[in-house]
Image 1 (cartoon, one colour):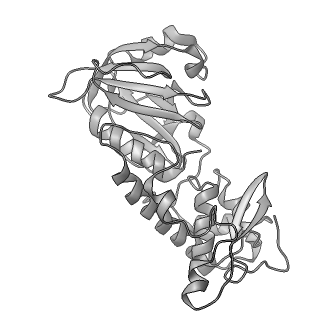
Image 2 (image 1 turned 180 degrees about the horizontal axis):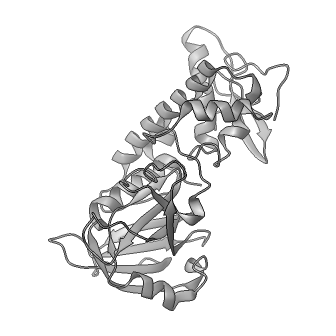
Image 3 (image 1 turned 30 degrees about the vertical axis):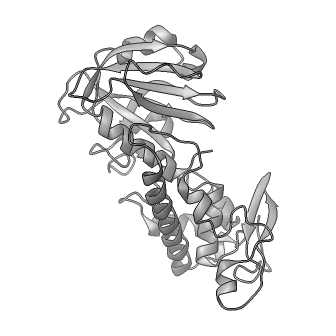
Length: 314
C-alpha cells in the first residue's frame, strides 16, 4: 500500500502537469474503477467535462483535485476529483500518441499548454483503487484542507482524516492530548488515520526505531516530549523517503508503487528480521532486528533499543 511520501510524489508530479488546465474529454475504460462514483459513468463524465483542475491537494494518503468552471484560482471550488490509489493505482501523464497501457481504466484529456502532455491516465492492475467526483466541505479547524491547497475545504469522504506530520498545520499538542486519553498501544494509535494520517506500517516501524520507542508503549503513559519525539522521527523518516522517492521517478511518470529508492537503501527496521541493528552495531553490539506479529501484519524493532514495556498494550 502506498504511504504518504509516495502519494506526495504523485501530488507534486500532477501539480506540475495538470493544475490550471481544462478537461476536454473523459473516457471510462473500466467502470469498476469509478464504482465509488455512485451515479455512474455519465454523471462522472458530466462533472469533469470543461472543468478546470485548480490544484492538486493531499492530506495523509488522500489525494484530490479541486474543480472549477473558471480557470481562476481565486474562485473557491465546490467539487473535486478524488483519486484513491489502492494497492496498485498509478496516475500517468502521457502524450496521446503514447500506446495505451494494459491496465488503463480511465483517461482524461486536457487543453493544450505548450509542449505539456495532454492526457492523464489512471492505471490499476488490481482494481482496488479508483476515481470519483465529490463535494468539498469546510474543514473543522478552518485551515487549508491539505498540502497544496489555499482553501479551507476537504472532500466529504476525507473530513474525518487527521492531519499528517508533514502538514504545516499539524498540531502536536492536540495529538498528545488525544493519545493520552486513549488506552492503546503506540503503533496502533499511529496507524489510526483519524488521529494522525499518512503513517503506514513501514513508516511507523521506522519512526519508532528512530525514536527508540516500542510499538506496544501505552499511549496514556506518554509525556509531551515522548509525543514530540515520535512525531519528529516520523517527519524525518518520511521527509527522507520523500527526497528519495522524488528523485527515483521520471518527471512524466507520476508513479506510486511502494518501492521508491528509499525502500531499498535506507530502512533501519522494517523487513530486516534477524539482521543487525545499525545503531547497536555502531557501538559494538550484535543485536538483531526482531519481527513480531501485529494486527495481522508484521512489526519490526530492536530488542535493545526498543525494549518491550511491562505494561505493553497491543
